[in-house]
Image (cartoon, rainbow, N blue to C red; front, side, top):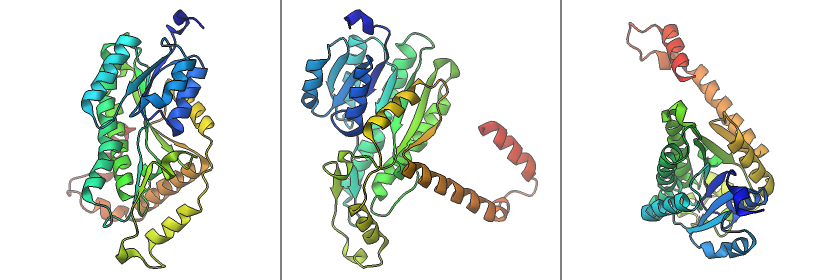
Length: 305
């Protein structure tokens, strides 16, 4: 395929593209003839792909998502190299396991920096690029890789969930802020278990805190379950799903990848509705006397549907 053949293909900006889902997605994008900016803390590990694909299709960029200057430079390089940007995938991250009392605060703060503030700074650059540099109305998609743990928290993963919960709230608000004419939309991706480095080299594990080290401790039981857990996901199928989602003219705000993620998401959503209905009287009891409950419900449903 000649360099000019790529001129109309989509340009992807993928963080954490050196391994796992990010690497598989990058390979799938390139195999389909689309273009990519592949970012990683050590982009040299992607050298085999740079040998296989021409510069007109692939740009490698060093990027630590906690480094705002590097983020800005990566977007400048994208503009100079490709002149457009269609899809940003905030995929970089790692896991942090341990009871809330076991993990030092500096480690917990770094977890949130990577999982939340990194994607926030990248999303802000993506908005400016898609609105101001892309042709008017072309817009773009920002796929923020959360986790089912970003919707349903679990013991020993409190700070991981905190970062992902924050990312989900930010994504929901950001996509509602976008003017329709910009055609910029954000999607929360909630993967379940996939065979990546998340549970190996990309997972920092702290020993069980002595106060929680009992046979009936929820965190001990959850750790044991994790030791025998076999991921059901297929990385290539996840990459195909991400490409499909990025192609939708009206993508969902939130979508789960994997039957495990879908089942846990549905369970929590159902439980939330059950609790809402069970304790509805308490919720309404705090209204001022003049509030018409049914009218208020209709107004809010209309405003936020």
